[in-house]
Length: 120
Image (cartoon, rainbow, N blue to C red; front, top):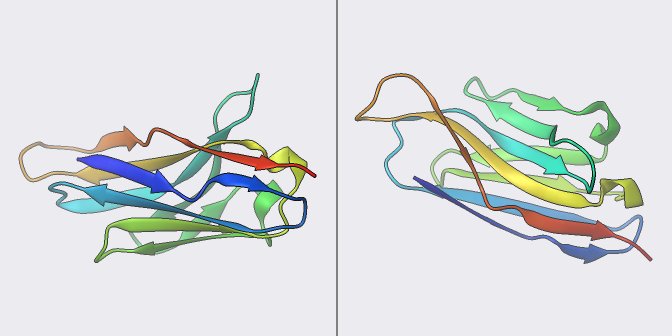
């Protein structure tokens, strides 16, 4: 199973970006799929994630500005980021927790990360 993320870049404060992350390979079911970020000198933190039940969880600082969504048929998760702020600057990592056909339990997988820079 692999994750391929896209959509990062440079944007001015107040602007918008949309990140996408597609999973490929054999997945029995998706337990959670979403986004984390890591700014220089800081720990990786949850941005937003979707659960198997379809609910979404957000970090408080992005509520009302970011929207996470998932297309199960395409095994793809999206992050629509609006009203971006300089403090949103970070490397954004796609995360997948899934169950497989050939193993028991759940596995965690991380994408390679995509840079988001918010600057004038």
